[in-house]
Length: 272
Image 1: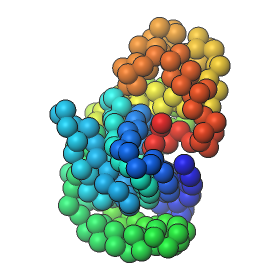
Image 2: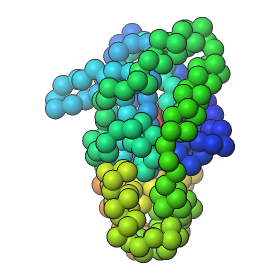
Image 3: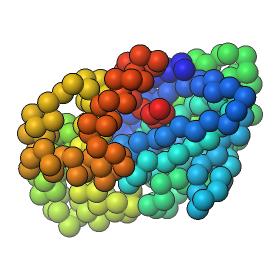
Image 4: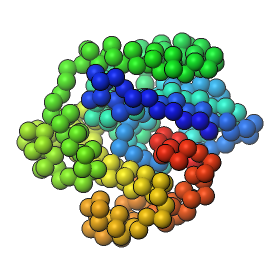
């Protein structure tokens, strides 16, 4: 597996965390991989074999692009042969406004949008191995899109505060950091993301635990619970299992086993 991340231009840093490319060779037999929740939304372009998601006991093929919204549990995807992905990792409170779409709470969003017109050109770049040019094309698209969207200072300030606090900040303090009332903040947040501040904060905090255990699987859980503002280790474990479907200890064992096969910093979209 090969993974690269690309910083967004300055003009996009209030809406986009990063752009990334991933190549995964899985062989001739259909193989599954699991995606763990985190505090971001991803716009996904994919190339190569069909990418499907497990849905209602069957497999649903996904168009390119599609959106991974905020998940409340792991999602399982299936493909075979070679899968390549170009993705845009967005803050969940900006992604719908950036695309001009109504917000929603579906984990996987299939949508019709002019951005799909990028697919043929990106496919040409991918087939030629010109990844940097594919990323440049996507960056330019979003630079143009961003120029058409009015900045929302409440959401920007709230998002910065939530991210800097790793999801541990109470809603009242997030509102204060955004120079807004709690009511105004929640109204803006729900409209833009489909979720409450508390919902997204909980996912940001889970993401910190997940990343920490992936990179340092021998971490003391009681200490990590204290550091991230959980009531105690049991509270951390309950929340972790709620989002991941497994215990922190089991996830850490998996990280120890599988991390040598991938980039040690890779805890992003494709979490094997």
